[in-house]
Length: 381
Image (cartoon, rainbow, N blue to C red):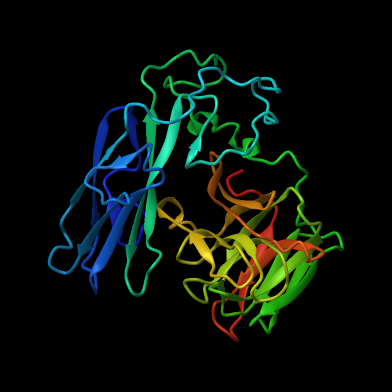
């Protein structure tokens, strides 16, 4: 019961099911809610993972209140016998020798969740648990559920500790992970080269961005109401980039001053410099962890992915954002490598001559500055 969600808890960190079998876990909340709290449980792919007792939409719901808040609700998931998945029995033709940190044949870049991991006999699904309460509509987390094809072995790996449990998955790639999730395209460096510009966007009316060549540290001071909903307010240190480019940006957020629980600092790809532009970003906050957020179209509502494993993270933390064919993917770095937090399609306007990428900060309090610092050293190295 130690998920770093503020109130919603589960008694498992992850679940593994063999085809045709079921698994059960419990959910509950850690404290009496101030108002009735609705919990929604669903799976990412109802065809390959069923929620027993779910409604016709594959959803389970439960209401916790001050009388029943300490109840534990049993959730049962089932993997059908013939999962509609293409299972891969053989390893891929690695183009690099064992021990190398460069795997160009592993394309496209795999995600951690909702992804078949070729060439392995394993499908990772997920159960999404989310609670909705007036002051905290984003509370929740994702519980990974792995569906395993019957039997194991025959993967062909003999080096390192790959396939140590007969089922090779991303955990077996811990010592490759840093470069395994890296685009094969050259990365843009935040080290100042004269091409960076900076400005306030939207409601950010004060602030600046400066670079110290001696230390290699960027400092961004920013106000702004937030990067959220349909319009934004933040300070941006950015480079113009070509349309439809395939690239990535990596930066370490060293520090972030706590002006609000949702103050934020991180890295962003953005179509225009208008307040309502389409964009994608990965950011860290003082008290809400790391979030991958995006606005798919100009003027639309911002969406966010933020769940248990990242809800407790704070600066310093290393973040990465990749853009490929209008698909943005956000990663965060921990001691065993890069981990994907989320990916989303962002519809950049083809009539806009250039896109933009760089570092952002927002104090979440109009007229009050927060200070964020950035460099290029990975936290954990």
